[in-house]
Length: 270
Length: 270
Image: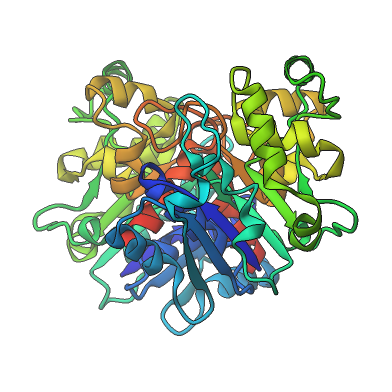
C-alpha cells in the first residue's frame, strides 16, 4: 500500500506513533511511505527512517523546494505545506495510481485494506464527512457559491492519482485561494470541498475517520451500536481532530490511554 | 517468573487478556503459569493453554479435588476457591520459592521484574494497600480485634513460599473464618489482613496495583504527577477493582479503550 504523509517538526512524534500503529495493526501488508516535506532536519528524517525502514516497509522522502510554490498565494499563518496533499499527484512516481493520505494526528487500530481497495473509478478522492448537521450547514453557507454537497474531512484521503493527473489544475486551486483568502478556515479542507466535493466518494466515518470527541454523540445516535466494543473491534482510523491532542498534557478523552499506549511503543523503539 | 492464577469460568476471557498483556509487556521473560482450579472444562483449559504454551512460557494446571477443602468452612455465596491463593503454598512444587499471584481483572502494561525481585526476607507476602483513608478506617474497625496495620489489596500478591510453608497453618485460617463468617466482606482479603497484615511488605500501589476508579484522586493528590502519561509509561499493573468491569457492556472509565485493545488482541489469537 502507498501511504502519503506531509508534516513539519511539530508533528514528528505523532507521525511516528501513527506509522507504528499502522504497521502493528496491518501486519501482513507492505507499505511504501511517501513523505512530502520541506523543513525536516536530517536527524528528524532519520528518526522516521528508523520507524519505517525494514524488511517490509520503505520510506520515500519527497523534499519540496521553496521555488516550486513561489507563485502560490499564502493564507494567514498557513505555510505552503497546505498545498502538498492536494498537489501530491505532481510529485508521485507516474506508476503510482492509488495513494492514501493520512494526517499525523491519527491512530490506525485495525486493518485498512478494505478502505484502500475502495473502487475510485470516476472519482478523484474518497473521504469521510463528519456528519454533524449544523457544522455542515455553516460550511455550506460559508463556501457558497461553490455548491458543495457535503463537507468532507481531509485528514484521511484516498487518491485516484491517474484521474487527478488528468483533472486537477493547480491554477484552479491558486485562483480559488486568492479569491477566498479571507474566508478560509482550514485551507486544504476548504479547497477540497469547494472545488472537488462532487468528485469525492464517501466512506464510513465510523470506520475510517472516527472523531473521538463525538463518542457519546455517535453512540446515542446509533442506539448504542457504536460503543467502545464496536470501535475497538471495527474502527480502523481514529482521527484526533480539533485543538485538544492526545499527546498534550491536559488532554482528556475516551481514547487517551490507548493513544499513550501506542506512543510508548513507538517512541521507545525509535 | 512464577505466576499463580485461580479462577472459574466466569473469568476465562479476562484471564486470557491478563496473560496476553503480561507476555506482551515482559517480552524478555520466561513465565511458569500455575493455575489452581476445580471447575474448568477441558476445552476451557485448552483455551488457556493456547494463550500460554509456546517456546518460552509453560502452563501448569493444579486441579484441586473437592475433598481437600471438605472440612473448610464456607462463607455466604463464596466457593472454597476463596482459600486457593492463601493456601497455594501447599500445592506448589517444593522447589518454587517465589510466586506472584494475579487476579484476572488486571492488565499488565509494563515490566514487572522489579516487583518480582522485591526482597521478601522475613515477610510472608508483598502487596499494595489502596490508601483511601476512610476505607482503611472502616476496615480496621470491622476487623477488630485483629489489630491490622493497613488494609492490603489481595489482587496482586507476591509470595515468599518457603516462609509461608513454615508459618501459615490452614487451621488458623479455617478457625478465623468460622469465628467471623458473618462479618467477612471479601473473605480472602479479610483473612489476609486480619491474620497476616504485619507480615506483608508494602509495594507502591501506583506502580503495582493501580485502581483506575481513583484516577482523578491519585492525580490531584500527587499535584498532577500521576497523570495519564505517568501511568502509561510507569505503572506495571492496572487492577480493575470493584463491580464495574471493563469487559462489561456499560463500563466507562479512563482505561476502557486500553482494556478493549488488549482484549481484542488476546481473544483474536485464542
